[in-house]
Image 1 (cartoon, one colour):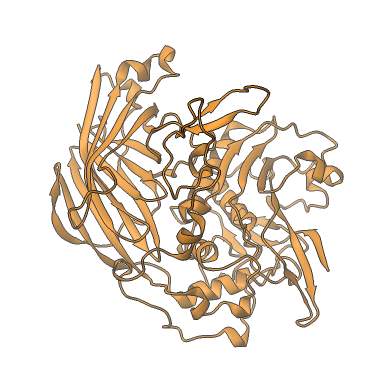
Image 2: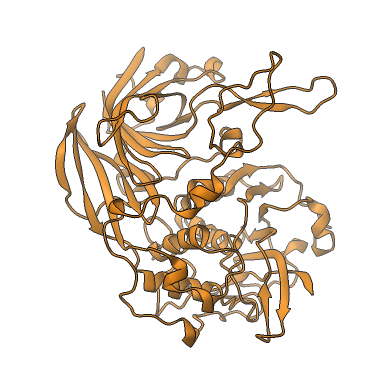
Amino acid sequence: MTVERFGSGRRLCHLVAALAVLGAVSACGGGGGSSLPSTATAPEDGGATEAPNTGYGAIPWQEDEVHATNIPPPDEEGTHQPFPTGVKYWLYQGVDNFDDRAPVMAFGSTLHVGADVSPPGALDRTGSRAGVALSEGAARDGVRAADVLAYLRTIASGNLEDGLTGLQKWNSPPYVRIVGTETDGRYIRLTRDAARIVNAALPFTRRLRLQVIDIPVTADSGEADYFDRISGNRNIFVRVVPKSDPWWSGAGGDELGRTRVLKHVYYSDQRQRREVASGALRADILIDPEAVASFSDAEITHLIVHELLHAAGFMSHTDAERFSSTLNDVYVRGTEPRSLIHPIDRAGLLAAYARFEAGELPELMTFESLGPWSDVSFHVRGDLALPSGAVAFGVAFRNGLPQPWAYGPTPASVLADNAALSGTASWKGALLGMTPAGVAVSGDASLTVELSKVRTPAYRTEPDGTLWFSGIQREDGSSWGDGDLAYSIEVDGNGFRRAGSSFVRYGFRDGKPPEDRASGEDFGVVTGAFFGRGHEGMGGVLERHDLSAAFGGKR
């Protein structure tokens, strides 16, 4: 018999000086690492270790998930707007509505865009392009297959839910909705940051969809009307509410965060245990703003990342003696990794969402079911020098996942306040990318910004500039696509992003609901930043279904 039940969450408990202990909702201090089934053990050196660029190719989710669906209806003339075969419609339908940008983080005096995966050492110099020094090479900087399997077996043990067994991942990407009219702007910002950090570890087609909605949190919004608050599945709701709110019913006074996941569960007579029957349906995350009032932005973001990992289906805690993990049952404030998520959690997300099905049992997670897995990354990188420091950008490719990144010195002021710039400012440089099959590409990059539009409120509804990539080609010299991509951009402080969407919405017509149609513009999500004390440089990442790229340039 199949039943529905809520998954448990977790507590961050017993704040003693700088120490906070994580435990299960049912009992603070529980969790820890479950012992692995004896039938699932394997040699520590199992799995492939060759450079991923030489033999991995596309991983299964790209073949199964990237296909044409929900193609927009024909226009008045009966023809479709441009919409490439093999593209999932929802990937780009809400580029400007669902805020799919990459994370932007400050690492000391450096701004960093994208995943924190820059190569740990020097690479082999391969030439230059537009003043950018190019290099590439392999580095053993990943997580071993044996460790990934041990981590996922613990995750699938359900040690926070009285032994509920099975991987609780989502079958379709959920929407992360920050709800509540009283939600402070700080928590909205930090939730966005946390979601982007998680997304940087996921395949492009599996990423969380981030959206802010306005739902009042009322005095009677407790468990009784759980299903009436917002109907429908594929939602992760984040509520920043104090423990006086009914949503925290039954909470201990020392809880900082709690996550509940709704899914189908059944009892296996053969194995004498409860098991996950299918993918997650809905999740609720609670953060107590009073309990975290003294926390820094990084500490709160790390807490939300922890809860988002639970909401993504990782309803277990890991053993701190076995792993350095964001899901450890012990957390010492101030010891977060600089990217606010550990490498093992990033590797676990990729393996869970690219290699296993929802409900996968821990004893069935083996080297064979994981498939080819390497701890070696293939890197492409570009470097250029500024008067105030170096700009670098590139892409790391490992286990079928290309991860772009860029970094450079933090400017002394926001772009709009730079009195030395006026009129049209331009930056030129290069683009480096990797396809989902691990094929490297390169091209030229050019960014132009109209400073008057950045500085004048009257122009807020118009793009501030244009980002252009041209001469894009593969390593063998053949053209990638038609060789160029172009995006209107808008500037925000020292960052910039794509302006507008790949789709335009047509209003109600003849009593029919509105329709989204391809706009004819290039697909892609752009996240960028300006670098150098006087904004001498720029860089960022471009992410699409068929290309993950990084770019950089200077004035």
